[in-house]
Length: 171
Image (cartoon, rainbow, N blue to C red; front, side, top):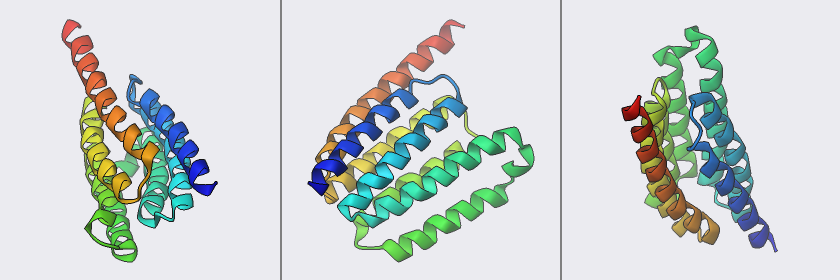
């Protein structure tokens, strides 16, 4: 029963994240991703997939911080980016359980580096890379909905990137 609940949470997270990458601005993309990350945090917690779980906790903090830093440019300092990278490194050491347990952290660190001051297209492109890491991790922790959602998300983000490029070349 716990496994089924975890998969339902993964499905809900997936739906919210699909909507995220079709948003037009960074704040809305990140707002949707916070909701998706909360649902995924619970999903991984129920699976006992602690590397994925802690990565989602940090992702919620990261995305919230990035939304806030957009309003307060003093927080755009590379120092804060460095703090997040150190947190990810410490988390990787604490939760290490083989190379596949590092995949969520690979996805998260690449994501934060590019999203820090990136534009919408950059966010979408790096999310695509991240979804491949998450796909490997979901195979590792045997999350069926996670696997399916990552494959569909990869396709969805590719479509979002194509649509973004089309919309911006017509302008």
